Structure formats: C-alpha cells, structure tokens
Length: 358
Image (cartoon, rainbow, N blue to C red):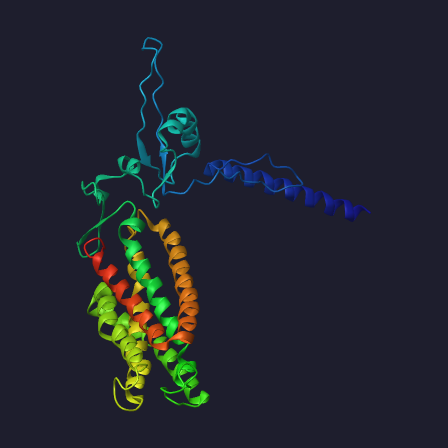
C-alpha cells in the first residue's frame, strides 16, 4: 500500500501546483478567477454581452442639485451606443431616464426601423436631407444621393403592389383557361380545334418561357434600363400586346376567315410569357429598393409579406373570375386581363416621381 500512497500524494501535489500557477497567471493577465482548489480548475467569469449596436439608448441625465428649481428640465439626447461601452453604464442610464423616455416615446429606437418623424432627431446629419417629404438620405459608393420617405409603403410601394396584384390576376386568368379555350370548350363554332394533349403542351411551353425569361429581365434591369423602365417597357411592348392578341383570336373572323393559329402562337408562346418574365424579375426588387438600405432595412420584411399577399389575392381572383366569365362569353373574359393589366400600368406610371431608382 505504500507505493499507492506515494502516487496519491504526488497527484495531489501536482494539482495544487497547477491551480496555484494558473491563478497567478490569470491574476497577472487581469482576469477575474474563482479561488482555486485541489479538486477544481480555475473558472473565468464572463461579462454580460453588449446589446445590439443598432439601437439608440438614452444618455445619462444630470441629477438636479438641491438648489435648483422644483421642476427639473427634461433632457432627451440620444446617441448610437457602441458595443464596447460598459453595459452597467447603459443600464444605469436607462434606469435614470425611464420616466422621461416613457413620455416621449423614443426609448430604445432601432436604427433599422426609422419610420416616424420623432425618430429624426436621433439621427446623424449625414442621414438627413432637410426635406420634410423625403427626410432620409443615402449616398452610395459612386456618390449618388437618394432621398427616401419615412413611410414608403404608402407613398411609393403601394403602386408597385397594385401592379403585381393585377399582373398576377392577368397571368392566372389566362393560364387557367387556355387549355379549355384551345380545345373549344367555350365556343363550339369558333376555336383552335386542338386535341387536349397539344393544348396542354402550349400551356406548358408558355409557362416554361415565363419562368425562364426573368434572366433576360434581370440582365436588362441591371445593365441597361433599370427596374422601372424594364417593368414599364416589358408591360407595354410584350405583356399587354400578347394578352390583346390572345383576346382578339376569340372574336370570330376578326383576324381572318378561319381561326388564326399564328396569332395564338405569337401571343401565347412569345409575347405574353416574355412580358411575364421581364416584369417578374423586377417588381419585387424595385419595391424593396424604396426603403432606405440602412435606416429601414428591417421594414423590408413587412413589405415582402404584403407583396406575397398581393400575389395570392391576384392569383385567386384571376383564377376564379376569368373562368366563370368565360363560361358565358370567352371574349369578355379574355379582355378582362387586358384591362386589368392596362389599368395597373397606368397606376404604375402615375407613381412616377414618387419612386427611388438606385
């Protein structure tokens, strides 16, 4: 048993020596440690992590002296807090100004959700334009200045959301009824007289083109025209003419004595899907660019919620209204998407001057 006691004594001595040296090293480095024991390693106490740097917290307010008047002056100065600040200082300053910030409503302003005029006093002058209508300023890497609304959803994005909703109405209104129209279900006397397999292939090809051409729209927007002009020209030159050509084929003998298959191919397989793709590539991005890229970046999430809500509303109503009307008169049904998209383009043009075009 004697060798065992010697090993146990040597092990205990090594643990004590390790704890002693570790504690000395930590004290020399300025790290707070717990008292070392023979059965535990030294533990380092971590400070509370700083809060998010994109928040504005109230600065400490001076305490009124006993000789001052009974009604203290309210001070509400706000600065951006650096992560390197001591959390205890921020906690103390927050508790000192709790009564003041509860009354002025500016407590803990998030720098990425600037949407109220009361927030402007907390911003550096580099982000302000001095214009009460478009008070937010952004300067890009090339030195171009852009001015933004405090509430872009109501001022500019509203027109973009309407265009998207009406465009989806037009797309799904035609898409859901094309097979029945080409096979003669709506009009026995005037139709393309296609077998169902061929009519379904037409729909599949047009859908494939519509979901492929967004690459073309993105290239035009990024390198040549910009989102605004790509949406406008894609709608006027391709989308509306394609819908109009399809609708005109429903009028007996308007484009010839017999059903005009060439017009159907051009409208259904070329113009309409290309217009859809070019608009699809730019609408959502153009709407997001109406928000200040720094001061309103957190508000873009709510924009996309509204954007996809408009998509679903347009698709649902178009998929219901157009097929029902087509049972009564296919010509009237197919001119509804033409009018809807034309009205959307007019509204989009009416918003010219309100939008930001980075």
